[in-house]
Amino acid sequence: MVQRRKLDHLPDRFPLACQWEVTCRCNLHCVMCYTDCFNEPERIRQELPTVDLLRIMDDIAEAGCLELCLTGGEPLARPDFFQIYERAINLGFLVTLFTNGTLITESIADRLAAHPPHRIEMSMHGLTETTFEQVTLGRGSFHRCQQAIALLLERSLPLTLKSTAMTLNQHELLPIKRHVETIGSVRYKLGEEIRPALDGSGTPFQFALQPEALDELHRQDAQLWSEACHRRRPDTSPCRSGMRRFHIDAYGVLQLCSGNRAQGYDLLNGTFQEGFYDYLPSFGCRWKDPATTSLLHPSVTHA
Image (cartoon, rainbow, N blue to C red; front, side, top):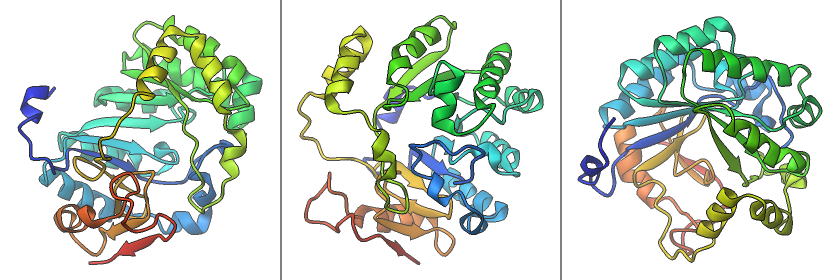
């Protein structure tokens, strides 16, 4: 592991960590998912082919990137997933895998164990089958998720379980957290942000908890309450997205972060170095500079 004091010597602008949405395809259709609107054949056909994805990965490794988060959609739904994953491991990335877990089999768990990631984060949106599958809309997904947890634990892989707080599962969030606390080294994360769908639809917001419901939830758990209080502290520092962290979408477009896709640089027709150093600093962000480009008008810059 790279020591933090060594990272402090990096320049302010340096491509340290990448979150890569390698696909929007998924075997589930979670009700709050902001990428599921692109989980359809025509969009999937437009996603990066293997050869281009690997070329871009080589470029970001050469630029010095250390951390790589593979997310989706469901990354394991790509037929070439292990070609991507094993290239990332061989290039020396600290790889985090975001997954719903339901595609993990013994053979997949074995391949992950052969080249362990830095971390696996798996979604666990319910403690009962009924609640879980109300969220995922996938019959059998609850049991497949439980099997995946067991397979990963048997191989001592680093696992974090996480839930998105919603109206559908609010009654099970604290029981999920308590359950995870009994599973040895497994960590738990509660997500509270629900985003608009990639097509601009606000459909996911119908499942968002109201602030007072979140506040009540936080007050029932000392850790959640401490984290909530920390987030409420005034923070006048500008957003630093695009400084050391960046996002790449399923089509090879470089962006500031997964939550700001207002502008992008097409890595299929340009170089990562040019995109990160010459274009990314000019992209508008309402948390950086309110006078910059509106988030309501997406655009893609082609080299």
